[in-house]
Length: 198
Image 1 (tube, rainbow, N blue to C red):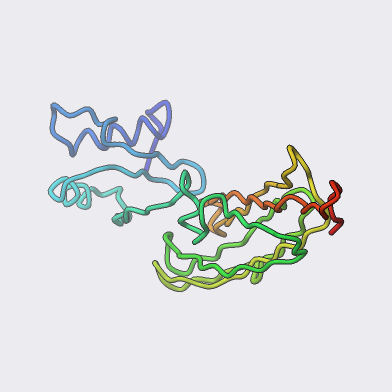
Image 2: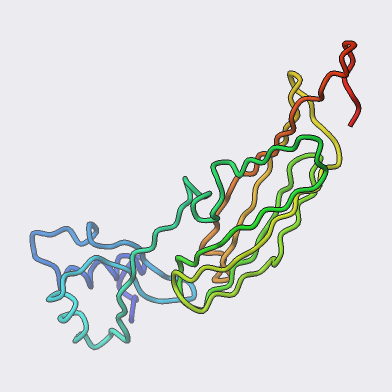
């Protein structure tokens, strides 16, 4: 596509859209995204008739429909199969393992790698650290180990916070963050006013 006479590729894409949408329609209301780095093209909302007309345009190389993807970012624990805040309680335990599933809501043949920001005083291990999906909506299982090293005590309660991020290998397009909150029960009294050491 030649862009010589336009200030930017976005202007060129808008001028192209203007040819195929109704005259009373502002083409910028149809343009979703203008690609102008490694890929030349744009994403737009078009009717079937508009799509057929655009497909006949000589400078158009290919057109493909996009699928609506539901990426849980605000409620990222749903994406990871975790309870809200992925909260775990320890009553004197030093090690805990949970099993979870991850569902691919992106593209087929997707690879997700995990990044871990461990809660203070807790070592977190995720296995496997990379999940390879062949299909959309495919679910794969992974495990998370929490190993307690020390306590952070505030108001007689021990807790620590961190998060997991599953990152798509497709230029990091999908990054889903899930918070982790680890809570220990308060130390029990031994009956004479002193806390037992765990």
